[in-house]
Length: 487
Image 1: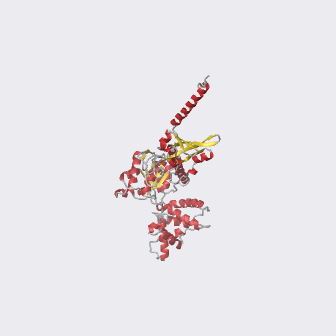
Image 2 (image 1 turned 120 degrees about the horizontal axis):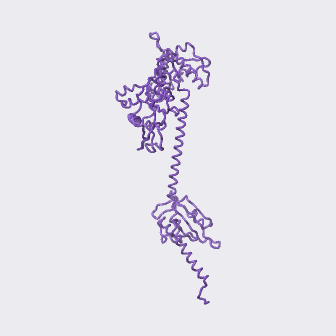
Image 3 (image 1 turned 60 degrees about the vertical axis):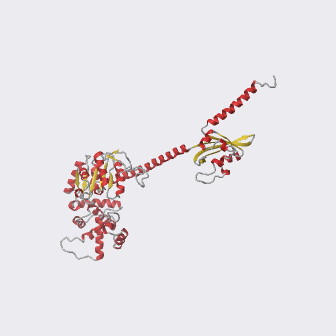
């Protein structure tokens, strides 16, 4: 065999090496990840098409150059990224593979993209001769992660909201237990109880009318507990205790971004009361806009959250209450007539306490027992003279005023019940129709504040509190009450 001739094995080996090199080249060109080949100094020796596409830099522009100067020179916030700190170049020093998905590469146009890269050393006979860097744009992955995290945050927020609403409903359930019994054997109360039994099984709207403190909420609870919806807690909203700009959101809920501060979706009381009863106390305080939306719910059985274009079907039984004359408000244009007639399907009138004097002994005994239990005291017996005082008092604040007087007496009493608050109030009455001797100025001020407190149900602050009624700052009223021995 001549020297110019190669053995079959040698020829096959040479062809395999060439084919393998060509194959590797085609693989690198076909990869979707960017690939850089670096020499021992960290200068680019190879740039695949994906790297050119991802960064905008061609092989001709970057070959023989430091890739750190092109792609890794600073952090996304603008801070300089020293080459000595770069994990890629540390690989060239240590031979240890580096990996990161917390950094960015800069493009030729000055923009950047979040990158995941690995740097692997090329070692020949124990000497580090270069490195291979493989990288890819992870913008889409991070966007998915952010979307997922936002969704998880929203789920967490909704979970917390549902937990809060569950606590609310559980509290409502506790409030209903043992405190919804309407006590009284007077003609007015017997008639009221009969009317409740008549209308409770129906889905009809009920309008409860009565003075402040007369027990309208107890009537609403009794209606609900005797209805087919009693398995679910009654949901209540005090329309007069909420700012007008928040009332619609409270009733109908809102979508995220519906208004400033609406960071998450919130379901309203109508959705909470779906399949149950919604008690709208102080219905006369509804704004004109809220009246229109409430009318729509009553007509169509659907609501619309603030900021939403979609309607939600709800099955809610409405019980409304007010101490105001709604008929007069309709005449004066303060309340919609169509809403009034929708609500006034079955009106119930709660008699004031002064018209049911025969019920006062039973009420007072019941209230004393409940208050004593709450204050962790033994309930004292009412003396006959005290009962006469209670029955002769006009009770402008109704049952709420009676409860306040008894609670005040329990706090001050030890063995026997004392009712100094009632005695102060009754001392102002002239049962014989004759003028009484004028009181000293300080005592007159004290009595005036007491009457105002009773009128406001014991509330000092707030829009319907005693301080607002008397035209005083809350701090000033508290100071005067303390000086007069009322606090």
